[in-house]
Image (cartoon, rainbow, N blue to C red; front, side, top):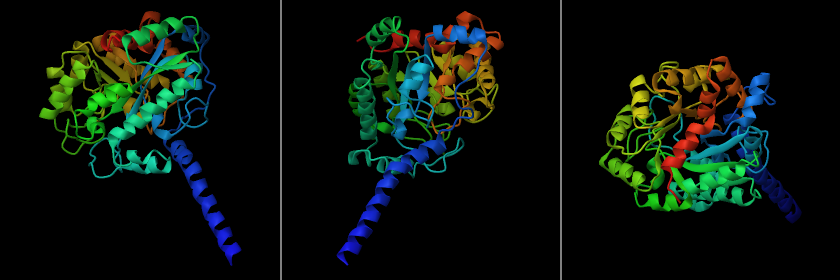
Amino acid sequence: MRRRSLEIAFVILCIVVAFFLVTPRLVDESQNKILKKPPYPASERALTLHPQLTIADLHADSLLWGRNLLERSVDGQVDIPRLADGNVALQVFSLPTKSPSGLNIESNEDKHDQILWLAMVDRWPPQTWNSLTQRALYQARRLHQFADGSEGGFVVIESAADLSAYLGRRRTNGKLTAGLLSIEGAHALDGRLQNLDVLYRAGYRMMSPSHFFDNDIGGSAAGVHKIGLTEKGREWVRQMEARHMIVDLAHASPKTIADVLAIATRPLVVSHTGVKGTCDNNRNLSDDQIRAVAAKGGLIGIGYWDTATCGSDASAIVKAMRYVSDRVGAEHVALGSDFDGAVTTPFDTTGLVEITDAMMEAGFSEKEIRMIMGENVMTFLRANLPEN
């Protein structure tokens, strides 16, 4: 009888272990798909220019899924070896700390927390289960651990001085890559503006007011009420700017975008978006919003997924880039992939040469390609990150 009980216990243990080992990968694989597997073909002229570019992407959610980003994976869309292979100099790693069920771009309530289940299955520390700030701190520690374990191949950027030093090293070693920490939605503050200091000390340098639902800072484009900035939100903008933290308007409601632009004294970004001019939906920017962000000296990161582009290839991405460039200039356009953001993309991060190729086909000059593929982001960060 005892032996039978031990056998049953062993089987149950094996099932539990298998569940915790296999489930995160299955979820990752189902949520972050690519339409074409590498390698990615391109024209000879694109293959010649692409390695010469300094590439930067304003948004990826790769920290969320529990992968060891130091290891090359067949799952998802980004890891550090694939960043190096794609010639990516800088990847902004953004963290969504809470996500409602039934996610959509029209209307979401703040009632459910899908990331809680991911945190539990993927064995995040228990303190992350009921604290969004703790989730952000945990993932910041992970990114710094990846840097520590990379033997110098990957660094975390926290200041303009960090960036300059890193780019100096990269001139002699093009395989180096770097990350910068960002947060999707100021609900990550757990309702306390004092937590801005906590997250700043952890290395976060960019944050959006909202994600897929309205919160106590401001409204979401996909929220129920789509409110503007609250009084607390206005103070949040002031405190962000005082710390030289970058305000990201991705996902913000039209009222919140207008309210932020009205009081902002520093340039800002829309890290991952589409534009209504090429893909008209609730998620994307209007012409007036494009011009207002540019007038503040800001950047607009063009996303790669279908809601952003109304397409499924690099030419659709480049069409949106051309639309923004024609209205406000190439100096305000950037990459904003949304890699690993529970979206399907045409390629993983090793396939960015397809964008280079499509930009050539669309008639962008080499100078414009260099700017959009990353030099705009580097110039922006040098001017807007804390100096040291």
